[in-house]
Length: 318
Image (cartoon, rainbow, N blue to C red):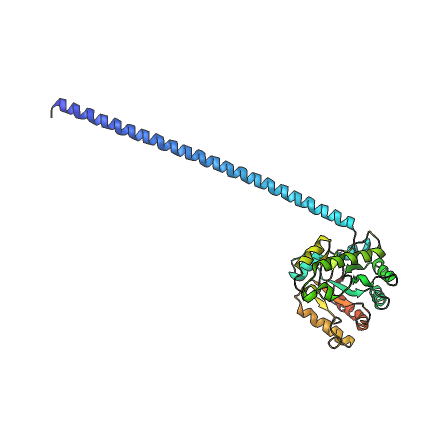
């Protein structure tokens, strides 16, 4: 091959190398630029995500602060609204929401000790209510009285005041205790229930003063006995009331044909009732101090002794 041809080939080869090198360099440059732009986009996205997370964290803190402030305001408001017991009862009073939580989901509530709540429905009256008060006083324990508004009168007012002054708690048990009014066709009548709650509260305040306010409600017959109570529950909540049933009983709410006839039979009924409900740190015992519930009064000291023997504290509901 002549020198001229070799030179020509070399020039062409070098030209090709330059072209290929240029293409490679250009391609590499654009590739590197794409990587840089991609890296910038990722960095910006990461910054946005980090900023979003910081803002979300700040918002969570602000929300937590608002919730805490709201709860504190609720506590202050509740304090201003009054309590259902005298101040000295604070040491053995338990919020009804905590008690219900323990009853519904055993061992999940803040209550970590065994506590019994002796509750008495349908008073006050001048016969059995004072007898119950005497027994509780002699035993050195306290209970919660769910009173019916129509039972509060000039005659029974001293009994109601004695219950309150002795450190017991007062709950509301409707104004009339009339199932046909409260639950027509077995369905809760929201407006009636709300009005009866207001009336019962007012009736008790007439005796105990405007500083008194109960925050607990027991549906006559029990919440579980009726249908369609969600709206009534919400109405009660707006009034500052929370309902509670029971997880122990003595059988004095049964018909005359079914109720226990002796102290031993009533005590045995009570013990059997404990197995019907889930095991729990708390026992809310359904009893009645109404006229005619003489056997309950007679058996009450043995009920108290049972819980004392089994290392329960005696509390009241608030």
